[in-house]
Image (tube, rainbow, N blue to C red; front, side, top):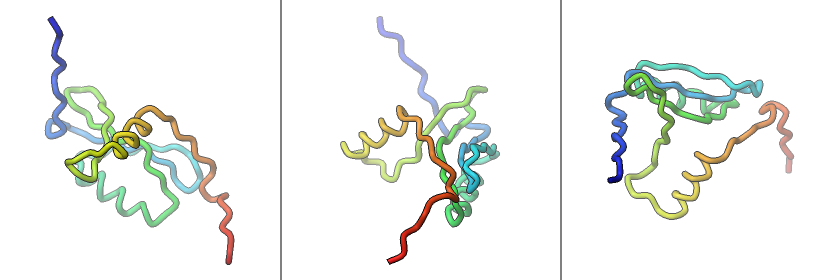
Length: 103
């Protein structure tokens, strides 16, 4: 008989964690008490040289990685993006060393 896995409910999360790289290119993580405070931090940081990598929720004493979906409906292109995001380890160079070309 197949064993069923217990569903993880994000509403039961007691803390949230965000992994990101700042302008210096160093990986940082920050913990939050609510999902709303994590999203507020994320929206304020987008104006700076900032890349978010992973989001985690602490449910029943264990950190679970999750993604925020743009829509409740997921199409094939988005499935490919989701698979790539969970399976690929992205390595960014120093964000301040990017050269911009002037026209």
